[in-house]
Image (cartoon, rainbow, N blue to C red; front, side, top):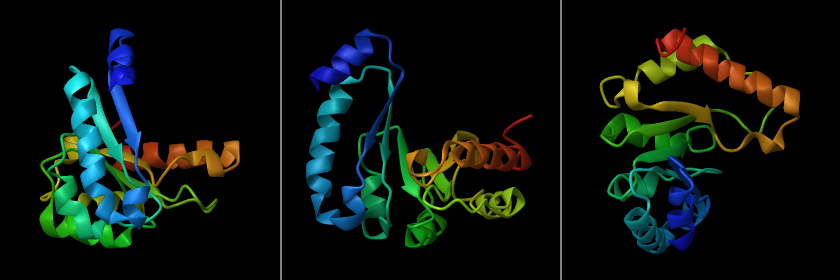
Length: 163
């Protein structure tokens, strides 16, 4: 909590907590919730994102939506089962949709991604959603990581979220 207060004083407007453990140990959700409660109490007006990755969080998806967070980040590549939960239950919490595989150099088709994301349109407010890689791009060569970001930008453009 103290670090969050210091970051806020420094003018930070967005905080992200990475919790890949939830894909392997969903029973740790209570501990994560407690920690997020502490961070939330200190974050002020900064936006708080919880990012999950390296697998699915399908079993706890609805519980994640109850956490004191502003954005929920989901790995929808390795977490394909989570995709089904988003389709089924939707989300009022803005989502960061991890649709580009950050662990594989193969480039995705922006039109195919756009079509798939648009299928969520009646379940998720796409105007408040983010498109993202499935996790950090540090596992890819730098040039390929840039190309993956270009795929995300083109996907957003095709959805209607960019020039």
